[in-house]
Image (tube, one colour):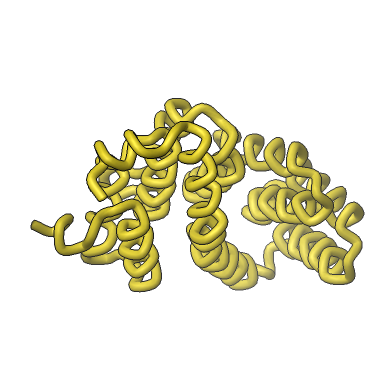
Length: 223
């Protein structure tokens, strides 16, 4: 379906409903693998240097909070992660802020989770990769609520050049464009993702499916 026909036939409310449907189907997969990779890598680095006293102490605190979270004590875990994030001096502090957000989401504390992510995203002393990840996660949570122009402004630096999160950022940019009704931009972004070298196969498949859902095709995008 051509974008002109699409926009003419559906009003703004229907576009919001369509976006919500697409986000429920695709949004949960955008960053989950990335988070696992970062946390796993950071944990390995932490244990490689376990002999350092401060790192050992923070690793033990982190592990204790993890046990509380696994035991269903989400509120207690969130408090422990928050304390470690505020007091810690190693990479575990940034990871604790991410886990604090996870624990608060598990407690249905959306505002608290977003505050934790925003704190990490704006803390200059932390690992830039984790800061950018926090930014992406915060955008993901706000994708169906915040101003698309503001979301786009936040995502564009992360989607540019050789940013380590550029593929995830471009997928979120495409979803933001769909919400804003800019289907041509969404098709262009998704077409690039569906065929770009270096994009994970699962993300390429997801981009191709989403592209077809908004009236495009990989073949058209490649031509």
